[in-house]
Figure (spheres, rainbow, N blue to C red):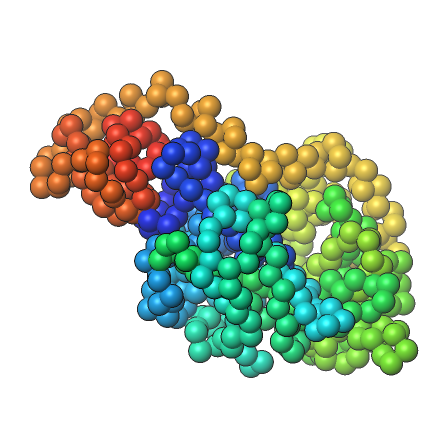
Length: 479
């Protein structure tokens, strides 16, 4: 794992560190229902991220951001949240270790959300790593005119709920019931958890989509059309099963009559309603029927309750697949199409260096660049393939990397080659100018000390941890 230089804040307690240094490191938690931005990214295979927004975030602040999902915090907040968390940095809590969470993009995965019969919603915060006494829970929601393509600011938010010291349940979850505000479509719910036993506060961005419930149907979110296309392009509505294998594909061809987003979205919704075995697209009418309506973002996608399906909209340029020959050095994500040996292939999951056509059970599926909507049933057999090759997606649970990494990095067997050469480095790091390490002193993230001729910097709060014995994953980092 590449530990980022930005891991300096006292409140950042890595899930990995919680295993390796239980006496000096603690983790805290994040929103589980609906999934917070950071916790949602941590649910998949962190080493092989498929969600484009999560992948982009990891490229900014490292994959350790998601291993350390429970520490988005400011140690000295003491209810002065606007002072310690600047505009544009709300999702990272003003903590540079989590900068990737602040990326301005409109494709962060949003959880459909709606109020119960009493107009309430029960939020669930996972406090299992380390529950704390609470001063208050504060919930905000973005204003109706919120623009996801601009940095999130405090002025974009409205408070809608404030709770006091709610105890955890037997599973160390905080169950937080709030009246849900009226909104439509995608928004950000922002949560602040201020401890009463410490000035530390935690900050959580939760991407949600306010939807209308329909009896017997589950709302998967909006069918978003934000791109003007060209005649000759085409759009695929793709449904995936619980194993992320293709269950169904509905295609709409773009002509001069439907290049506008509102029109092709309407045509796609009607095609889904006419052809899909599993889904409907539209809005519920007075009788509870789901009917397509005109509008770029007016229609929602519904599936039968309990179906465990997900969907994606693929927009393809005419002739685009043939312009992308397979390259063994490139990374491909699910849905990418390449040409190889005169054929077209579509990636079924993240891969690199896997030659298309080399294996029946590999990540590539042969396609023809644009079939009619009747083609998907022919390609449905791959539904049985993933149990053979798909385990890499589910094998590394969120907690697995920390479990497997300690045996690799914990033993000091590999440390001496790393730590001995820097013995000649003190003149470069100017160690003599730093205060000597004191076993009785308390150090917080960013503090620097000298010890045995070597300079060190604290990654988070510590007391009594010998810098020379810290190791690669410990609290002290050599400078």
